Length: 154
Image 1 (cartoon, rainbow, N blue to C red):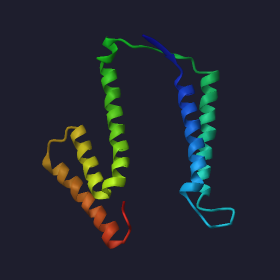
Image 2: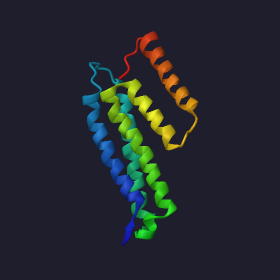
Image 3: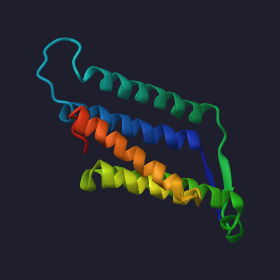
Image 4: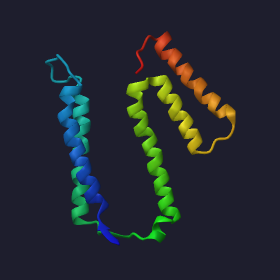
């Protein structure tokens, strides 16, 4: 099977949609009672507007300049080293997505310990003290922020 696509058009469109959604969500996520020109919503709105502007530029670049890329999908390409490397990247990114979801349910200590352990396993760390250092660091961060500075961690 042969697929022709333009990555600039696809990513530009996706990030335009993401910027619009984030811009619309700013008032509901960052509530403020301030009436001045600069509020707590100002920087997030500037960042999402910048994301929108640069995504529009990427979309225009894809429409005007960049030629379409052709990908040929076959069983041989699914067994290639390039495909395996891409799947490892997707797996690594999915670890962080799972961490984000897990953080709300289990809290900082458990979810971060699971993430650091998963990353060490992902990279094939065999020495036990790598895991110990990681878990010790998580404990120190928790102690400093939650106990010493009295900051509520998730």
